[in-house]
Structure formats: C-alpha cells, structure tokens
Length: 209
Ligand SMILES: Nc1nc2c(ncn2[C@@H]2O[C@H](COP(=O)(O)OP(=O)(O)OP(=O)(O)O)[C@@H](O)[C@H]2O)c(=O)[nH]1
Ligand SMILES: [Mg+2]
Image: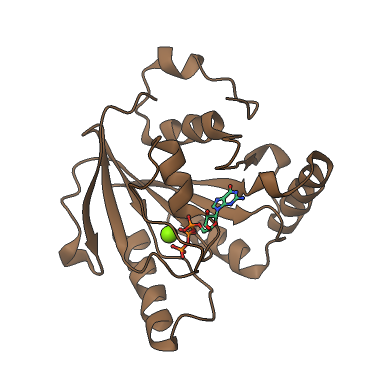
C-alpha cells in the first residue's frame, strides 16, 4: 500500500460524533498498552500521527483517521486495564461495543494481542462477539521482537490453541523490526476489498518486509 496521505479526522464517544460513514473503515482493538496505536503508525510509516504511550490507557476516545482519502482507520481505546478509573472503564465497554455493533462502514477489525501473553476468555469472547456481528477479524501477535524466534513459534502455537484458530491465522508483528507489516497490510486490504490486484501480488506474505 502506498500511503499518499494520512490525517486525523476526529475523536468521538458516541454515534452522533462519528464522522460520515461513506468510506470503508478498519478498526484496531485489543488490551490497553498492547501496541494498537504503534501498529497503526507503523502501517502508515508515521512516527507520531497516532499518540502512543508507555502508560496504559493512553487512547481514551474513538479516533478516526483518513487514509489516502479512500478509507479510514479507527484507533480504539484498550480494554481490560485495571489502573484506569472504574468510571472511565465502565463507559469504555459500551462506547467500543456501540461502535463495533452499529457502524455500517466497518469492514473488519484488527485484534492485536501481546505475543508473550497467552489469551484468555476475554479475547476468545471478543472474537465470538465479532462473529456474531458479522465483522471479519485479523489476529495479530505484536511485540514479537521481545521473544526469541523459538519462543515466538511456541507462543504462536499457544495462542492458536487458546483461541481455537489455525496458526496461519495469527500474524507475528513488531513495530521495532517491522516484522509482519506487509502481511498485516495484505490482510487489511482484503478487508477493505480495495487493493488493486497488481499491488497485492507484490506482497510476500511470510512476515518479511
Ligand atoms: N518492543 C516493542 N514495543 C512496542 C511494540 N508495539 C508497541 N510497543 C510499546 O508499547 C507501549 C504501548 O504502545 P501503544 O501503541 O501506545 O499501545 P496502545 O495499545 O495503543 O495503548 P492504549 O492506547 O493505552 O490502549 C509503548 O511504549 C510502545 O512503544 C513492539 O512491537 N515492540
Ligand atoms: Mg492507543
């Protein structure tokens, strides 16, 4: 994917505040601090378009970005982080669920997980929930740079087992080494159904860049 433009559009809490929905949209979801915002920056070749932080809970609103004036990326707040005040945490669930279940433009969800942390019921439930709403899902294991190659393979298998999915459905990713960047784009383009065929063929889907 050649990025000609990438711009922040707006932040929203509820449907009234969402931007117009005439372009296809891809949302990025996952636990707090897992690396959602960083992954978006890496995909877009930007360092700071999307705000990232070492402190979990950085992204607190639904943030819309317009890419190439052709489709949108949506950075969601993370779920499941205890240090965020209970009142805030309580409002996030409905905020994210409302977005995911009602947004017509939403073509698919990129679910980002930390490769080191074997997923539990929360992730499995989230995937089931997306199926229920007919939203296709791409599964990413990020922070792959934090593990040796052997442990990465082990953890990928553990994730596949825990989630009941095929190992090939899990894309290893790292913002540090850019491992998996092309594979994520390939999957995202398929969701958007936007890629001219010629460009798709240029990708090698083995995690290399
Ligand atoms: N080593 C390594 N660090 C990463 C990677 N991706 C993200 N990080 C770091 O993880 C921390 C959290 O990254 P964010 O992108 O802000 O995470 P987030 O999921 O958007 O977090 P919230 O908005 O709080 O939910 C930052 O310190 C990033 O630099 C990665 O692939 N490798
Ligand atoms: Mg974030």
